[in-house]
Image (cartoon, rainbow, N blue to C red; front, side):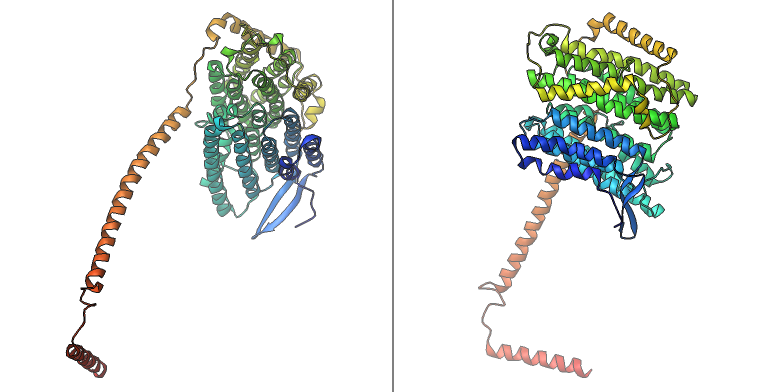
Length: 560
């Protein structure tokens, strides 16, 4: 081992095991201090390999610093702090510990410089996030099991790809790869499963809303964005990702509009917004990659704010379906304001973080002369205001009065929301420092007249469409069938068929084994039982005759 820095994610991961045994103010102080220490360590990592280990002839790099790692490490640790503050008084003592282990493993992936380290932290991330969902209680156990199955399958595919890639290249270094071998294809598939790409996109709205009001905040931040990071490192400029991302974008829009559950609406929008990032990775230019990094940072912040707002409503009312909500602005003004700021940010409203981040991906499409991609992204950007910017706050806080009069949540929860509000607006108002964090030099001015006017026109048009079609867009107390219906149904059918075949095979096998055992015992009894030929008494003369014959046979064989 060479001279090193302390791995930033390790402080969160190890601290997670300390939290369940602490209580009171000490637990609160430790819970808030751990992410801040991790943030300090993130900025202590120098560029290049900061920790190397020689293992069975391979050089592992568990900690490798660069601008991209610092950007994602910063937002991940900030998110851990805000999420920890929001969940400070959660009655389940193990959820926050699991969430910090989850965050620590995610930071581990961010700074990993080799594929084996990526895989180790990738699997730790899957296990910890499964436990976050499981901590919501028995109602979430089914979703946590489905989530674990999807991600463990993805882990197996990723490991197979890494093994094939290492055999083909002789190196475990995590660098940009070309899709020219079975190993790189399997690695890409493993990454795409975690990013929420088709055909398994439905794991996001299935699992995340099943978590508790606080657990969903953590889940929204790490898994999909960690997958975005590894795609940026491993497959920049892979054209196929453009079309995968466009599918994710419009898939998320359609299902978010149809959905009734407020947290499922926000989770479908995760798939939609991550689709923008995947498109940017597919474009692969410096402008597009800066846009992906900026959008990932901004998205983590405003999506967490939206899910904190929805989580506060769930915490206060116990309800999540928009058909059971409405009129909450009267008694929950702080939650309403925070939800609106998050909705404006995801809609790329001027003076919010979404405006200065997402537009860089569109600029990347323009610079690459991809007109079709640009128009697709512009259309989707306008739809974001419709399906989340208006859909979520209108039906949750306004619209029909549900008669519910809950109060705003406790101080720790509102402070966490205000912190993210400040980030959303601060980045949007003064993006200069934010742009300094990008992996490439930024030569982009978001606040041009043409850009501001175009975006306001798109938002006004979306708002007009929303209110003109309000009657048609109003939700009904129904459920939405997603594509997971096919593989859930297929899996159930295959399971039933396997059960039937296995029972039949087992009955046949055990029947034959019992019959063979019965015959064996009967044969033993027949020869060695009380009346068996080997158990009866023999006359002395007959025994002498047999001994003589055997001796004669042995002498003949010996001399011949």
